[in-house]
Image (cartoon, rainbow, N blue to C red; front, side):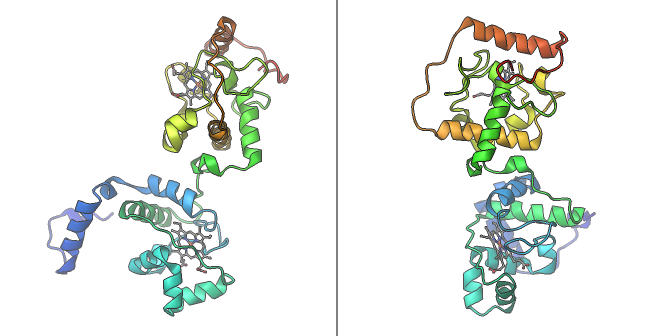
Length: 281
Ligand code: HEC
Ligand code: HEC
């Protein structure tokens, strides 16, 4: 525990530190509030295609404990522009370049807030030990999905592939343009543009919890797995990107009833074992 720093003891005299801290506080107040979770998400989105934290080298080196084995200022300079360090003849950067087959890491422009959260994430992982920081699959950007992930999201949404923990298929209450034969239910809002409306940041936590008043009772005990959250997000991202106009929100009474039946079925009335027939989710 590092509690001494708050004990009011004078810090070691270093003329620049307070000024730098003050500047940092003025220019990026959010940096103080940002933490490891934001850093983890940033890492998944911007770095995980080439790096792991604690799972071994990939295109680039394993970054587990990188702030322990290297000087922080060096890491900051490296991330900003690996190429300039390499070209300037920095020995460590050149050694890494050789070790990683001459592949140059692209420059990563991070603002102070992003860098602070990323470093909080690295330090948190180093403190927890190797293997503690597998990036959450749900944190990956919905727009980075493969066609298979989008297709799986659609199957989960319409119930042709059952959800691992037995939650009801979304189509019982939600329509998405182009889904199913009769379209989806209307108890919940049309989700064709949910990804565009809520964005990556709004949708990711919502899919993790599905805790709106009507959905909470259904999914509190049957949450989507992280892979399922991701697949559904990818499907919704794909749907909202898909150009054309959505069809009018359907307002068929019976589809509302289907949704309600789904809800009631899961809230209390006992439902029989889930059928495998994709046409009766
Ligand atoms: C396209 C692949 C790629 C991406 C994306 C990438 N890196 Fe790298 N990174 C590399 C490679 C390759 C190296 C090895 C050095 C070299 O060859 O340039 C490296 C090296 C590093 C190092 C030095 C590691 C050490 O052991 O000293 C750090 C730190 C680093 N990367 C951080 C990041 C961060 C943070 C991000 C995301 C914001 C990121 N990288 C994104 C490929 C990548
Ligand atoms: C029993 C009906 C029902 C089921 C099943 C259901 N939802 Fe919902 N959903 C709703 C309702 C109703 C709302 C509006 C908020 C509320 O009243 O709870 C909603 C809201 C949402 C929203 C927010 C939409 C917005 O723009 O604000 C998202 C996203 C969502 N649901 C996704 C899903 C996903 C993904 C599934 C399947 C895993 C699902 N829902 C299953 C009824 C349902």
